[in-house]
Image: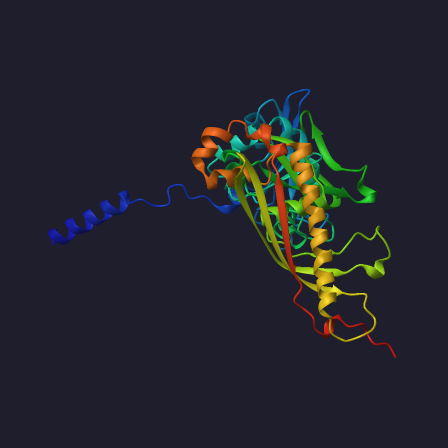
Length: 413
Protein backbone atom coordinates (compact mmCIF):
# COMPACT_ATOMS: atom_id res chain seq x y z
CA UNK A 1 0.00 0.00 0.00
CA UNK A 2 2.81 2.38 0.91
CA UNK A 3 4.53 1.58 -2.38
CA UNK A 4 1.39 2.46 -4.34
CA UNK A 5 0.96 5.75 -2.49
CA UNK A 6 4.61 6.65 -3.08
CA UNK A 7 4.29 5.83 -6.79
CA UNK A 8 1.14 7.97 -7.05
CA UNK A 9 2.81 10.88 -5.29
CA UNK A 10 5.86 10.67 -7.59
CA UNK A 11 3.62 10.55 -10.66
CA UNK A 12 1.71 13.65 -9.56
CA UNK A 13 4.97 15.46 -8.84
CA UNK A 14 6.33 14.62 -12.30
CA UNK A 15 3.11 15.79 -13.97
CA UNK A 16 3.39 19.13 -12.20
CA UNK A 17 6.84 19.87 -13.63
CA UNK A 18 6.29 18.49 -17.14
CA UNK A 19 6.36 21.24 -19.80
CA UNK A 20 3.04 22.28 -21.24
CA UNK A 21 1.53 25.13 -23.24
CA UNK A 22 2.91 27.76 -20.89
CA UNK A 23 2.54 30.53 -23.50
CA UNK A 24 -0.83 29.40 -24.84
CA UNK A 25 -3.08 32.23 -26.02
CA UNK A 26 -6.38 32.32 -27.84
CA UNK A 27 -6.41 33.34 -31.52
CA UNK A 28 -8.98 36.00 -30.69
CA UNK A 29 -6.61 37.61 -28.18
CA UNK A 30 -4.32 38.89 -30.95
CA UNK A 31 -4.71 41.32 -33.84
CA UNK A 32 -3.74 39.26 -36.88
CA UNK A 33 -2.01 41.76 -39.18
CA UNK A 34 -2.17 40.65 -42.83
CA UNK A 35 -0.73 43.70 -44.57
CA UNK A 36 1.83 46.40 -43.81
CA UNK A 37 2.90 49.57 -45.56
CA UNK A 38 5.63 52.13 -45.02
CA UNK A 39 5.85 55.74 -46.22
CA UNK A 40 8.52 58.35 -45.64
CA UNK A 41 8.55 62.14 -45.74
CA UNK A 42 12.08 63.23 -46.65
CA UNK A 43 11.43 66.86 -45.65
CA UNK A 44 10.26 66.09 -42.10
CA UNK A 45 12.15 62.77 -41.93
CA UNK A 46 9.04 61.11 -40.52
CA UNK A 47 7.95 57.54 -41.11
CA UNK A 48 4.34 56.43 -41.52
CA UNK A 49 3.55 52.79 -40.80
CA UNK A 50 0.21 51.36 -41.95
CA UNK A 51 -1.29 48.06 -40.82
CA UNK A 52 -4.22 46.05 -42.16
CA UNK A 53 -5.95 43.47 -40.02
CA UNK A 54 -9.21 41.59 -39.81
CA UNK A 55 -11.44 41.55 -36.71
CA UNK A 56 -11.15 38.34 -34.68
CA UNK A 57 -13.71 38.96 -31.92
CA UNK A 58 -16.15 36.23 -31.02
CA UNK A 59 -19.59 37.34 -32.19
CA UNK A 60 -23.05 35.99 -31.71
CA UNK A 61 -25.21 35.45 -34.77
CA UNK A 62 -27.21 38.56 -33.93
CA UNK A 63 -24.21 40.81 -33.31
CA UNK A 64 -23.48 43.21 -36.21
CA UNK A 65 -20.01 43.51 -37.64
CA UNK A 66 -18.82 47.09 -37.91
CA UNK A 67 -16.13 46.19 -40.42
CA UNK A 68 -18.47 44.99 -43.14
CA UNK A 69 -19.90 48.32 -44.31
CA UNK A 70 -18.34 47.85 -47.72
CA UNK A 71 -18.47 44.05 -47.76
CA UNK A 72 -14.77 43.69 -46.85
CA UNK A 73 -13.61 42.68 -43.40
CA UNK A 74 -10.55 44.82 -42.81
CA UNK A 75 -9.41 47.62 -40.55
CA UNK A 76 -6.60 49.99 -41.59
CA UNK A 77 -4.66 52.21 -39.17
CA UNK A 78 -1.66 54.48 -39.84
CA UNK A 79 0.77 56.11 -37.41
CA UNK A 80 3.55 58.64 -38.03
CA UNK A 81 6.73 59.09 -36.00
CA UNK A 82 10.45 59.79 -36.39
CA UNK A 83 11.23 56.09 -35.86
CA UNK A 84 9.64 52.81 -36.91
CA UNK A 85 9.52 51.65 -33.30
CA UNK A 86 7.63 54.82 -32.44
CA UNK A 87 5.00 54.09 -35.10
CA UNK A 88 4.56 50.54 -33.80
CA UNK A 89 4.10 51.88 -30.26
CA UNK A 90 1.48 54.38 -31.39
CA UNK A 91 -0.44 51.71 -33.28
CA UNK A 92 -0.47 49.48 -30.22
CA UNK A 93 -1.94 52.36 -28.21
CA UNK A 94 -5.14 52.36 -30.32
CA UNK A 95 -5.51 48.59 -30.72
CA UNK A 96 -6.90 46.77 -27.69
CA UNK A 97 -5.09 43.52 -28.48
CA UNK A 98 -1.48 42.55 -29.00
CA UNK A 99 -0.24 43.10 -32.56
CA UNK A 100 0.84 39.85 -34.23
CA UNK A 101 2.77 39.88 -37.53
CA UNK A 102 2.96 36.16 -38.28
CA UNK A 103 0.18 36.33 -40.89
CA UNK A 104 1.49 39.28 -42.93
CA UNK A 105 0.92 38.48 -46.60
CA UNK A 106 2.04 41.70 -48.31
CA UNK A 107 4.39 44.58 -47.49
CA UNK A 108 3.90 47.74 -49.58
CA UNK A 109 6.59 50.45 -49.65
CA UNK A 110 5.86 53.99 -50.85
CA UNK A 111 8.12 55.53 -53.51
CA UNK A 112 9.74 58.08 -51.20
CA UNK A 113 10.42 55.42 -48.56
CA UNK A 114 11.94 53.17 -51.23
CA UNK A 115 14.17 56.02 -52.39
CA UNK A 116 15.39 57.30 -49.03
CA UNK A 117 14.59 54.81 -46.27
CA UNK A 118 14.42 51.29 -47.72
CA UNK A 119 17.11 49.78 -45.53
CA UNK A 120 15.35 50.78 -42.31
CA UNK A 121 12.24 48.94 -43.46
CA UNK A 122 14.06 45.80 -44.58
CA UNK A 123 16.20 45.81 -41.44
CA UNK A 124 13.11 45.97 -39.22
CA UNK A 125 11.38 43.19 -41.14
CA UNK A 126 14.52 41.04 -41.03
CA UNK A 127 14.91 41.46 -37.26
CA UNK A 128 11.25 40.74 -36.48
CA UNK A 129 11.05 36.98 -35.85
CA UNK A 130 7.26 36.98 -36.09
CA UNK A 131 7.27 38.45 -39.62
CA UNK A 132 7.83 35.75 -42.23
CA UNK A 133 10.37 36.50 -44.94
CA UNK A 134 7.99 34.85 -47.42
CA UNK A 135 5.69 37.91 -47.32
CA UNK A 136 5.28 39.50 -50.76
CA UNK A 137 6.98 42.85 -51.38
CA UNK A 138 5.59 45.62 -53.61
CA UNK A 139 6.49 49.25 -54.35
CA UNK A 140 3.94 51.93 -55.14
CA UNK A 141 4.45 55.21 -56.96
CA UNK A 142 2.16 56.92 -54.47
CA UNK A 143 1.73 56.26 -50.77
CA UNK A 144 1.55 52.79 -49.31
CA UNK A 145 -1.23 53.95 -46.97
CA UNK A 146 -3.43 54.90 -49.94
CA UNK A 147 -2.87 51.50 -51.55
CA UNK A 148 -3.72 49.51 -48.43
CA UNK A 149 -6.80 51.55 -47.55
CA UNK A 150 -8.26 51.01 -51.04
CA UNK A 151 -10.82 48.21 -51.15
CA UNK A 152 -12.79 46.75 -54.01
CA UNK A 153 -16.48 46.94 -53.03
CA UNK A 154 -17.28 44.08 -55.42
CA UNK A 155 -14.90 41.64 -53.73
CA UNK A 156 -14.86 40.44 -50.15
CA UNK A 157 -11.11 40.04 -49.62
CA UNK A 158 -8.89 42.57 -47.82
CA UNK A 159 -6.52 44.79 -49.81
CA UNK A 160 -3.39 42.88 -48.67
CA UNK A 161 -4.78 39.58 -49.98
CA UNK A 162 -5.91 41.23 -53.22
CA UNK A 163 -2.40 42.59 -53.85
CA UNK A 164 -0.86 39.21 -53.07
CA UNK A 165 -3.15 37.49 -55.57
CA UNK A 166 -2.41 40.08 -58.28
CA UNK A 167 1.34 39.61 -57.89
CA UNK A 168 1.01 35.82 -57.81
CA UNK A 169 -0.82 35.84 -61.15
CA UNK A 170 1.39 38.54 -62.71
CA UNK A 171 3.16 35.98 -64.98
CA UNK A 172 -0.17 35.72 -66.82
CA UNK A 173 0.58 39.19 -68.16
CA UNK A 174 4.38 38.93 -68.22
CA UNK A 175 4.67 42.29 -66.44
CA UNK A 176 6.05 41.22 -63.05
CA UNK A 177 7.03 38.29 -60.89
CA UNK A 178 6.85 37.34 -57.22
CA UNK A 179 9.40 39.05 -54.96
CA UNK A 180 9.39 38.18 -51.27
CA UNK A 181 11.29 39.95 -48.50
CA UNK A 182 13.79 37.09 -48.60
CA UNK A 183 14.20 37.38 -52.40
CA UNK A 184 14.82 41.12 -52.09
CA UNK A 185 17.47 40.55 -49.42
CA UNK A 186 19.19 38.05 -51.69
CA UNK A 187 19.30 40.55 -54.55
CA UNK A 188 20.79 43.17 -52.24
CA UNK A 189 23.49 40.75 -51.05
CA UNK A 190 24.59 39.34 -54.43
CA UNK A 191 27.10 41.34 -56.44
CA UNK A 192 26.26 42.08 -60.09
CA UNK A 193 22.52 41.76 -59.56
CA UNK A 194 20.35 44.77 -58.77
CA UNK A 195 16.88 44.34 -57.33
CA UNK A 196 13.51 44.70 -59.02
CA UNK A 197 10.14 44.65 -57.24
CA UNK A 198 6.54 44.60 -58.56
CA UNK A 199 4.96 48.03 -58.98
CA UNK A 200 1.45 48.21 -57.50
CA UNK A 201 -0.93 51.14 -57.91
CA UNK A 202 -4.37 51.88 -56.49
CA UNK A 203 -7.04 53.42 -58.69
CA UNK A 204 -9.79 55.12 -56.70
CA UNK A 205 -13.38 54.89 -57.87
CA UNK A 206 -14.60 58.12 -59.49
CA UNK A 207 -16.97 58.86 -56.60
CA UNK A 208 -14.19 58.23 -54.07
CA UNK A 209 -11.28 60.23 -55.51
CA UNK A 210 -11.81 63.11 -53.12
CA UNK A 211 -13.58 61.25 -50.33
CA UNK A 212 -11.78 59.02 -47.88
CA UNK A 213 -13.48 57.65 -44.79
CA UNK A 214 -11.20 57.95 -41.77
CA UNK A 215 -10.70 59.44 -38.35
CA UNK A 216 -7.62 61.60 -37.69
CA UNK A 217 -5.95 62.22 -34.33
CA UNK A 218 -2.61 64.04 -34.19
CA UNK A 219 -0.20 61.83 -36.20
CA UNK A 220 -2.58 58.93 -36.67
CA UNK A 221 -5.26 57.99 -39.20
CA UNK A 222 -7.72 55.36 -38.03
CA UNK A 223 -10.18 53.16 -39.90
CA UNK A 224 -9.05 54.41 -43.31
CA UNK A 225 -11.10 53.29 -46.26
CA UNK A 226 -11.75 54.27 -49.86
CA UNK A 227 -13.30 52.40 -52.75
CA UNK A 228 -11.27 51.46 -55.78
CA UNK A 229 -9.12 48.72 -57.27
CA UNK A 230 -5.47 47.67 -57.55
CA UNK A 231 -3.26 47.02 -60.54
CA UNK A 232 0.21 45.56 -61.09
CA UNK A 233 1.92 48.02 -63.43
CA UNK A 234 5.44 46.89 -64.24
CA UNK A 235 8.49 46.90 -61.98
CA UNK A 236 10.43 49.17 -59.65
CA UNK A 237 14.19 49.14 -60.18
CA UNK A 238 16.85 49.56 -57.49
CA UNK A 239 20.54 50.38 -57.48
CA UNK A 240 21.95 49.05 -54.27
CA UNK A 241 19.33 49.67 -51.61
CA UNK A 242 17.86 52.78 -53.29
CA UNK A 243 14.94 52.95 -55.71
CA UNK A 244 16.06 54.57 -58.99
CA UNK A 245 13.14 54.32 -61.41
CA UNK A 246 10.21 52.49 -62.99
CA UNK A 247 10.02 49.99 -65.81
CA UNK A 248 6.82 50.47 -67.80
CA UNK A 249 4.82 47.54 -69.13
CA UNK A 250 6.85 47.11 -72.32
CA UNK A 251 10.17 47.38 -70.48
CA UNK A 252 8.98 45.03 -67.74
CA UNK A 253 7.99 42.40 -70.26
CA UNK A 254 11.37 42.77 -71.96
CA UNK A 255 13.04 42.33 -68.57
CA UNK A 256 11.09 39.10 -68.00
CA UNK A 257 12.09 37.79 -71.46
CA UNK A 258 15.77 38.47 -70.73
CA UNK A 259 15.83 37.01 -67.22
CA UNK A 260 13.88 33.89 -68.12
CA UNK A 261 10.78 34.51 -66.05
CA UNK A 262 8.00 32.14 -67.02
CA UNK A 263 5.70 34.18 -69.23
CA UNK A 264 2.28 32.78 -70.06
CA UNK A 265 0.51 35.74 -71.53
CA UNK A 266 -1.38 36.97 -74.56
CA UNK A 267 0.54 39.22 -76.92
CA UNK A 268 0.30 40.61 -80.43
CA UNK A 269 2.58 40.92 -83.45
CA UNK A 270 2.63 44.73 -83.39
CA UNK A 271 0.89 47.60 -81.59
CA UNK A 272 -2.53 48.59 -82.88
CA UNK A 273 -1.19 52.10 -83.56
CA UNK A 274 1.03 50.78 -86.36
CA UNK A 275 -1.72 50.01 -88.84
CA UNK A 276 -5.04 48.29 -89.33
CA UNK A 277 -5.99 45.71 -86.72
CA UNK A 278 -6.86 43.17 -89.42
CA UNK A 279 -3.16 42.53 -89.98
CA UNK A 280 -2.30 42.01 -86.31
CA UNK A 281 -1.64 38.42 -85.20
CA UNK A 282 -2.74 37.32 -81.74
CA UNK A 283 -0.59 34.88 -79.75
CA UNK A 284 -0.89 33.02 -76.47
CA UNK A 285 2.58 32.38 -75.05
CA UNK A 286 2.65 28.92 -73.47
CA UNK A 287 6.31 28.64 -72.50
CA UNK A 288 9.45 30.74 -72.38
CA UNK A 289 12.98 30.61 -71.04
CA UNK A 290 16.34 32.26 -71.52
CA UNK A 291 20.02 31.63 -70.94
CA UNK A 292 22.56 34.34 -70.16
CA UNK A 293 26.18 33.60 -71.03
CA UNK A 294 29.31 35.71 -70.71
CA UNK A 295 32.27 35.46 -73.08
CA UNK A 296 35.57 37.31 -72.78
CA UNK A 297 36.42 38.89 -76.13
CA UNK A 298 39.53 41.05 -76.51
CA UNK A 299 39.68 41.42 -72.75
CA UNK A 300 36.09 42.67 -72.51
CA UNK A 301 33.07 40.75 -71.17
CA UNK A 302 30.35 40.31 -73.80
CA UNK A 303 26.83 39.18 -72.86
CA UNK A 304 24.90 36.65 -74.96
CA UNK A 305 21.19 36.19 -74.24
CA UNK A 306 19.37 33.26 -75.83
CA UNK A 307 15.57 33.55 -75.58
CA UNK A 308 13.20 30.74 -76.54
CA UNK A 309 9.42 31.07 -76.64
CA UNK A 310 6.55 28.83 -77.65
CA UNK A 311 3.21 30.36 -78.56
CA UNK A 312 -0.03 29.33 -80.18
CA UNK A 313 -1.66 31.52 -82.79
CA UNK A 314 -5.10 32.67 -81.65
CA UNK A 315 -6.03 34.88 -84.60
CA UNK A 316 -4.88 35.17 -88.19
CA UNK A 317 -6.11 37.52 -90.91
CA UNK A 318 -6.02 34.84 -93.61
CA UNK A 319 -9.36 34.48 -95.35
CA UNK A 320 -8.64 32.21 -98.28
CA UNK A 321 -6.65 29.20 -99.34
CA UNK A 322 -6.05 26.03 -97.37
CA UNK A 323 -7.59 25.39 -93.97
CA UNK A 324 -4.05 24.76 -92.74
CA UNK A 325 -1.24 27.27 -92.38
CA UNK A 326 1.39 27.00 -95.06
CA UNK A 327 5.06 26.79 -94.08
CA UNK A 328 5.78 30.32 -95.23
CA UNK A 329 2.81 31.61 -93.19
CA UNK A 330 4.13 29.85 -90.10
CA UNK A 331 7.56 31.39 -90.66
CA UNK A 332 6.01 34.84 -90.97
CA UNK A 333 4.00 34.36 -87.77
CA UNK A 334 7.11 33.23 -85.86
CA UNK A 335 9.20 36.10 -87.20
CA UNK A 336 6.59 38.69 -86.30
CA UNK A 337 6.45 37.43 -82.72
CA UNK A 338 10.25 37.35 -82.55
CA UNK A 339 10.35 40.96 -83.74
CA UNK A 340 7.81 41.95 -81.09
CA UNK A 341 9.86 40.23 -78.35
CA UNK A 342 13.02 41.94 -79.59
CA UNK A 343 11.28 45.30 -79.37
CA UNK A 344 10.45 44.60 -75.70
CA UNK A 345 14.00 43.41 -75.00
CA UNK A 346 15.57 46.48 -76.62
CA UNK A 347 13.33 48.74 -74.53
CA UNK A 348 14.34 46.94 -71.32
CA UNK A 349 18.06 47.03 -72.16
CA UNK A 350 17.90 50.72 -72.98
CA UNK A 351 16.16 51.49 -69.68
CA UNK A 352 18.46 49.31 -67.56
CA UNK A 353 21.81 50.07 -69.22
CA UNK A 354 21.51 53.61 -70.53
CA UNK A 355 18.90 55.36 -68.41
CA UNK A 356 19.01 53.73 -64.96
CA UNK A 357 22.54 52.29 -65.34
CA UNK A 358 21.57 49.49 -62.97
CA UNK A 359 22.31 45.82 -63.68
CA UNK A 360 18.80 44.56 -63.00
CA UNK A 361 19.39 41.67 -65.43
CA UNK A 362 22.13 40.01 -63.38
CA UNK A 363 24.78 40.15 -66.11
CA UNK A 364 27.47 40.77 -63.50
CA UNK A 365 26.26 37.78 -61.51
CA UNK A 366 26.54 35.67 -64.68
CA UNK A 367 30.17 36.79 -64.97
CA UNK A 368 30.74 35.86 -61.34
CA UNK A 369 29.34 32.36 -61.94
CA UNK A 370 31.56 31.94 -64.98
CA UNK A 371 34.75 32.98 -63.16
CA UNK A 372 34.54 34.02 -59.48
CA UNK A 373 38.25 35.02 -59.31
CA UNK A 374 37.92 37.21 -62.42
CA UNK A 375 34.85 38.90 -60.99
CA UNK A 376 36.36 39.45 -57.54
CA UNK A 377 39.78 40.61 -58.66
CA UNK A 378 38.98 42.70 -61.73
CA UNK A 379 35.33 43.54 -62.34
CA UNK A 380 33.38 43.73 -59.07
CA UNK A 381 34.70 47.15 -58.03
CA UNK A 382 34.22 48.77 -61.45
CA UNK A 383 31.14 46.93 -62.74
CA UNK A 384 28.78 49.84 -62.06
CA UNK A 385 30.97 52.09 -64.23
CA UNK A 386 31.42 49.75 -67.20
CA UNK A 387 27.99 48.09 -67.19
CA UNK A 388 26.27 50.77 -69.36
CA UNK A 389 28.71 50.03 -72.21
CA UNK A 390 28.86 46.21 -71.99
CA UNK A 391 27.88 44.69 -75.39
CA UNK A 392 24.73 42.56 -75.27
CA UNK A 393 23.80 40.21 -78.12
CA UNK A 394 20.30 38.72 -78.13
CA UNK A 395 19.04 35.75 -80.15
CA UNK A 396 15.34 34.92 -80.17
CA UNK A 397 13.91 31.57 -81.22
CA UNK A 398 10.11 31.41 -81.51
CA UNK A 399 8.04 28.31 -82.23
CA UNK A 400 4.38 28.40 -83.25
CA UNK A 401 3.32 24.73 -83.22
CA UNK A 402 -0.41 24.92 -83.91
CA UNK A 403 -1.06 24.70 -87.65
CA UNK A 404 -4.44 23.03 -87.54
CA UNK A 405 -7.94 24.04 -88.55
CA UNK A 406 -8.47 26.26 -85.50
CA UNK A 407 -6.70 28.99 -87.50
CA UNK A 408 -9.11 28.97 -90.41
CA UNK A 409 -11.57 31.79 -90.93
CA UNK A 410 -15.06 31.25 -89.55
CA UNK A 411 -17.57 30.27 -92.24
CA UNK A 412 -20.64 32.47 -92.43
CA UNK A 413 -23.46 31.37 -94.72
